[in-house]
Every structure is written in C-alpha cells, then in structure tokens.
Length: 296
Length: 223
Image (cartoon, rainbow over all chains, first blue to last red; front, side):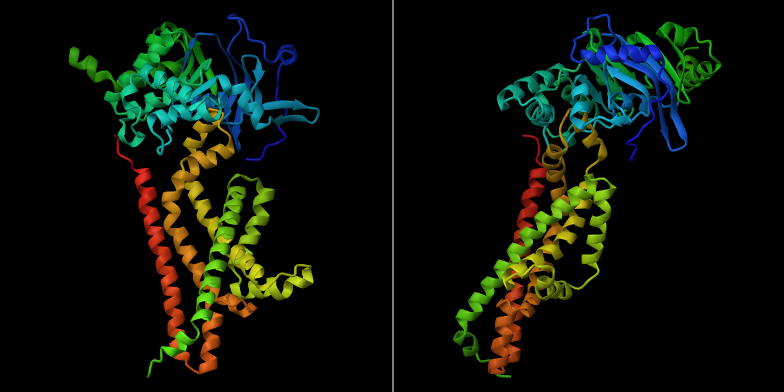
C-alpha cells in the first residue's frame, strides 16, 4: 500500500473550523464534556471495494459503544481505523481532539510520521480477536514490555505496575507463565492487562471473545464489565448481544459500510425499526431459538 | 598405495597456518555475511519498493553467478573500479557478500514467520520498529531459522577452498602445493578432505548445541 497522497475527502466546513482550533492547542486535556473519540465522514476502500462509507460517530468519556453487524459489514475495519491499523482514506478520526494518522500539508494530506501517530494514539488501548501475545515472553513480560521500552520505567516499577494489572484481571498467580500454557480466556485477559498497563483513556476491543471456547467467554466479558463499571471509555466490536444489551450505553448496527441504526440497547434490540436490523436480529434469535423451544 | 606420514610431519607448520587462514577467512566471511544479510533482510521487509527493487536485483545477481567468478571480479576486476584489495580482504569481502544474500533470504523467511498480529499489538503500544525487530521478531525466528543458518555457514566453509585462486594461502592452496611438490597427490587431497570434515563437523555440533539451547529458551515450562 503506497498511498502517500490522499485527497482531503469531503469534510464539511464546520469540522474544518474546529480542526483549526484544536490544532492550536493540541495537548489540551479536554474537559469531561468533549468526546474522547470523534469520527467524521470516515471512509475506506480496499481497491474498488468501499468498505466504510462516511461514518460519523462520537464517543463520550466513560461511554461504552458496541458495534454489531454481519461479517463484512466493516465493523472490524472501522475499529482498526481508530487505532490506525488501517489507513482510513477519507474524513477524520480525532482522539481527544488530535487528528489520527494524517497531517495536512500544502500538497494535501500525507501520512503523519510514526512518532506523531504514536503520540496521538498513546491513550488508545487495543485488544485483538487473536490475543496477539508475544509467545516468547511470560504473561508478566508481555505486560511489562511496553512499560519498559516505551514508558522507560525501571525494571522494578514496570514489574510492580505489571503485577497490579495482572491482579486486576485475576491472573497475578500466572505472572511467570508463558502464553502457550494459558487457556484462551486467560490469554485474552493478559492481553487486556497489557493494554491497560499503558493507562489508556479509551479501549478498543476487536471481537475479543470470538476466538474463545464458549465456556471461556464469560471470564473475559466479566473483566470487560468491570472495566465499564469503573468508567473506562470503550468501543467493542462483538457478536455477544447479551453483553451489548447489558453493558453498552449505545449500540451501533453497521451494514455494508454504513451505520444503519444507532441507539440505546433498548431501541436496537427491542424496538428495531430498520428491516435490515430486524432481519439480523431475527437470524440471531433463530440460532438461539432452542432455548425458547426447550422452555415452551 | 603406500601412505607416507612424513609428507605431513615435514610440512606441519604450513598446514597449521593454512588451517588457521581457512578458519580466519571463513569466520570473518560469516560474520560479514550475517551482518550484511540482516541489513538486507530488514531493508527488504520494512523498506518501500524503491529500496526493495534494487536489493532484489542484487540478490538475484549474486545468486545466479558462480562464487569463483564473483571472486575474480572483486580481486582482478576491482582495480578497474578503483578498489584494490589485498588477497585476504578481497577474499573475506567476496565470501561475505556471497553469503549475505543467502543469509538475507533466510532472515526474510524468519521475519515473515512471526504473525502480523504480534507486530500490530506492539505497534499499538508505541513500540518502535527497531525495538520490535530485536525484542519480538528476532528471538522468535531464531529457533526456526537456526538449522538453515548453520547449513549456510558450513557451505561457506567449503567455499573458502575457492579463495586459493586469488593466492590466499589457505588449506587448499597449502595442501595442493605440497602435493605438487612431493607428487603425493592422494595423501594431500585426502588430508584436505579430513581438514574440511573437521571444520564442518565442529560447526554442525556447535549449531546443534545452539539449537537445543534456543529451543529450551523457547519452550520453557511454567515454574
């Protein structure tokens, strides 16, 4: 991928003005009123396929947003764009006011230098479907690595913070264990601890339970619920409708790269109006219908 | 056939120094080759296409020409390009460059063997490319590529015999010299084989030792 020159996209004028303001004070720690994450008209294409079509989204501090939708709807791409693991090529993503991934020059929009990208997303924590732990390091080693190399903490300090994080996800007793010796659920909890250690202001979860055995899903969701209760700002791509219904402040239904519906869990799950959403939920219900059948 | 050990005892000093020159040029060539190979691999994996394309051409060029010809080019052709080297530096350079492209290919497959997701995780945590290479990729790929590396190192050992053509007094040069002096061709050539056998065997043993070491490091059990 070599898209150095990206056209500015169709950014509306008011957005551009707010851009200027926040560029003047890039490091301003926003009050609790301003959104942690702002997406305006975000678009992304793979070749001719437009997988994201102008997404607008705001995530407020301490808000939990769940992204649901059929596979191929673009929800993972959208989430990965928020950490700039995908280069979105239209619109803007701002984290606490700072533009993510791109910088405006007189020749148009260019990819920002890596150090600047890291600076903008230093308050973003990411959790992956496949855990992505480093197999040659212990659980504690995984959690401490970035503390040591990026935050430059001393070995003792890093270890102390690392142990605290493992304790938080209930795995302090597994600190010296290698990922291969941990269950999937435990590995994902270590991955959450690793992200939390960097004290992010927002956590992104990309289908965190999809690679797990059904009986291990609960322990990971439990950790996420605790995080939500503590006021962590979270964006979660998930197929766990139960989790979305219980924990989310707002649920967003994506289909074919567009936001088809958004609202409270009540609005989305119980008062769905859009036919596409109704059909999606009906499929989900049909798959789990045997519970109802058994009760009847 | 009569086997006369006095041929060797009479020339023990020469044979010894030939052995040392072989060992010296070989190990220097390996070190140079590994260093260059790592640089090429990193540039290939992380560089843009303007870096990758010329490197690809370089690799293909070295891989598809005989070492003998490359060595002639460096030593006899070098002066026409303004590079006049003594035999030994020329030999080490030739050996290093020749080895580097093979080492680079080995390293490249190593880099590609580490799952992309692990790098994304590092990226998200603000870990830099360089830190990622040394802390995450190299330790993991070492186990996998070690046998291939050791194999290439032994190949380079045997290629040092070619250095005799640019007048480096290494084992092959010394022993074939003794052979033509004394007409004891069979004895000297057999001795030559034994010399390389010892070196290659030593290298393989060392490699196996290293493999078990690294392997143990990778599969440490919970304590």
